[in-house]
Amino acid sequence: MDRSSKKEWKMACCFPVILDRSMRSSFKLSKSSSSSKLDKSKSSICSPTSLSTKKKSIQENDNLVVCFGELLIDFVPTVSGVSLAEAPGFKKAPGGAPANVAVGIARLGGSSAFIGKVGADEFGYMLADILKQNNVDNSGMRFDTHARTALAFVTLKSDGEREFMFFRNPSADMLLTEAELDKNLIQKARIFHYGSISLIAEPCRSAHLAAMETAKNAGCILSYDPNLRLPLWPSEEAAREGILSIWDQADIIKVSEDEITFLTNGEDAYDDNVVMTKLFHSNLKLLLVTEGGDGCRYYTNNFHGRVSGVKVAAVDTTGAGDAFVGGLLNSMASDPDIYMDEKKLRDALLFANGCGAITVTEKGAIPALPTKEAVLKILDGATAN
Image (cartoon, rainbow, N blue to C red; front, side, top):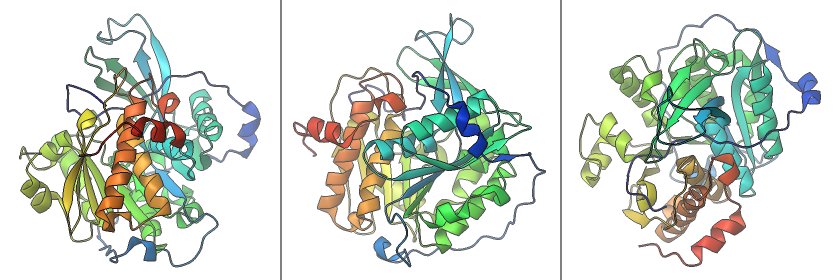
């Protein structure tokens, strides 16, 4: 993951899609409903010392990871280094960090599901098919008959980083309601993973909070990747407050260096004291800071350290951060207490770094997400510092 820039990798992907129209009869359609008021009461979620004890009973798939949030279409310029106005054309690309993570886990041989809402339109059905084709359980998806699937135009700058222009006024993902949640699916999960984009507007915000509460009550491990997208929030302050509003409920949090600077109002993202005093909380078991091609840092109650990245020739940084998260959560799904053993944690993080490294060697996110065999092969010559 050799990069000169330390900015967090963004997500999008481009690849051919076969639309299976016969699936539509099994999809659950819903009409968009009015926003429900958010319950402002805040519940405290206390995690036991061992995450493996959180599940109260054996489920159908004890290693299931359920990813909650946005799934959309990115329109990516066919050439790099140009503005949207200068782009000669665009290629449609499935997007959305939670969905990328779900596919990444399945590609590694793990078990994953996605919960979210798209429009009852061609793009929405296409996205559902993509998840199914990649062995992700899409039974938790909902289809809105009155709102369209979210769209984003993404500029590919000369350094491979991206800038976004979104069309969601509102889009279907913003209209998911608590009544539409597949709570039975959430209760089957060992890990419940989510971002912050679903916190921006009602009724999806209330649905997000209800999903977290369902996961907590079922004993799931809560995993949070804020995935900051400032253009989607009303203001910087709203983004900061929204992201931090659920901060103290997560067992696992992954952030980028830029996100640390933003959330701490400009403090040094490389200062361990800043990370531990400003971002680590009493319920947290594992805090991860990604550093792009340079690897990642890890913080627990008992130790902290750094694992170097895996050096590769980067072609496209799309989806590398999501590949990293997928790699780690796949390891934690089978060994929830991995964070308690520093040697095992470092091995898992090196594996996650390898997932990200392979992803940047090809264009697109989902097509480039690696298999377990590919990661082990690339790690043969890698050394964690």
